[in-house]
Image (cartoon, rainbow over all chains, first blue to last red; front, side):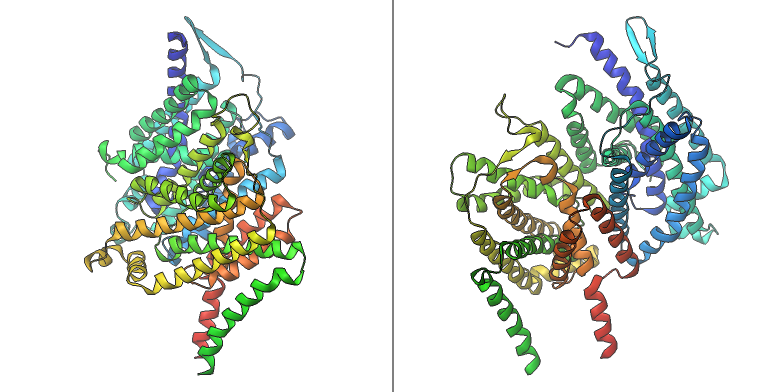
Amino acid sequence: MISPEILINSLMLGVMLGGLYAVIGIGLSISFGVMKIVNLAHGDFLVLGCYFAYACLSFFGIDPIPSLIILVPIFFALGLALQKFMLERSFKIDPNAPILLTFGISIILQNLYLLIWTPYSKALITSYMLMTLRIGKYNIPFIYLLDLLVALVALILLRAFLKKTYLGIAIRASSQSWRASQLVGINTSRVQAFAFGLALALSALSGVFVGLTLPFTPTSGTNYLLIAFGVLMIGGVGSMVGSFIGGIVMGLTQLLSGTFLGVGWQLFFTSIIILIALSIRTEKILGVKK
Amino acid sequence: MTRPSFKTILPIVVVILLAVLPLLNVGAYWTFLLFLFFIYLVLASMWNLLAGYAGLVSLGQSSFIGFAAYTVGALLMMDISPYLAIIPGGVAAAALCVIVSIPLLRMRGIFFAIGTLVVSEALRIFFTNFKPVAETAVWGGAGIPIKAYISPTALYYLALILSLISLLLLKFILNSKFGLGLMAIRDNEAAAISCGVNSFRSKLYAFILSSFLTGIAASVFYLFQGHVEPFGAFGMSWNMAMLIAVIIGGLGTLEGPLIGAAIIVFFQQMLAGFAGLSLIIEGIIIVVIILTMPKGIMGVVKNLRAQRA
């Protein structure tokens, strides 16, 4: 059966992958906090990050990690534009309009990838892809370790940004109360645009590392949307610690169900966890303030 | 008095024309297109009941479609007459709906949308991995055959009757106390509850009715299709078809799905050769319509009428 080594190994990998999932979730969490809508194309923008890095790698031979210097600003600008020209208009129409709108964007993106990059799964193949660190009996893939490290740095930086800078405080204020923050002179429209840009910049970052860790297909976006949503539901809005816990829960669920029941069942159990989190709203259990 | 009588005569004439159409030898292609139109009409109307009238945007209607189709397939494996398998398909979808509505109906807005999406994803993965009989080529990712020897004409009539029943039922419901309660919940839930509308129960009934008829439509469609596999049955393209039909036609209008379903059938045939491209164009249409005319074609028509009056 399953030896303790395998179990410990998948526990470690689950935690490390969970760090990455926390970054995937935190982008959604920031934009959800400020705008009270979930961008249904969140996962597809993440996959766009994977494919951009793939294009940089295969056409220009640029390593995925340095290519972030180009990707992050592009995604930030894309986020600003999307918020300004589409989402902001859809808020005024109907509470359900943003859901339908972002669903439409998600369908466009998925089928665009299908057309450009074919349905076959792709991976970012790098020299350090298969490197492992050997600690005692355990082999730890270098990429997974990098994921956790990047996630921790990103979460700590974001926390500092949200606590210390004017924009960060404005983002938190408008998540708490839109009207009150307008009253104290915050330009909520600009804060929303910035938050959405930040969310997309984070999805570029997490997209590159997802691409380095796991293979991706044009429709992977839906899975990452669901994972991000699970993290948001477990961790609550705008909480770094909550998101980190949420990410680890998702990562462990995926790895452990994969180890015990086979790879095919991984996403099934992830979905079950998301449904449970959705119906009990763990954000209230963890005591995270909205 | 000429106008209202025209309004009642026109649908009857159209229905009689549609009923005699297969007898006129118009060719299999046209009856197939109309069959598709009826199926999409039922699916779109039921999605419209949820999204347009109850304010519940469901992105997981495909879970009822796939579940009903698998039920029909499993029943046919037991040598049950295909006509007798249609109603159980709908019942299975309604039963699934009752189970999932325990968590789902406590959510609203985006949470409900994502919850339904999660359910359909979970079911798709479940049926991809589900192999009750090992060492066979069926079940799992390959899906199961639906061996039904029903003539296309019989299926055409089934779909026609089904779409008539759903439209009449919707018209009846929307004028009833239940329908008014639903719309009140959509517009202001707190106010509706304080007026004595049982919010949870109204939503539950709407959700069950919509899943039941969606399941029946799916059973009829898959009897025609002859085969069900998880990626198609639980796939996004079903949700996309209902969504786009309702949004083009007009969200929250009774006539909207009629126009939308006709457009979507026409559109899919036109772009049948470019499978990938057609979904991109459908996505673009959704985005453009939501941003420019959120009430669809019927909304534009109503505005024009209001201007003229």
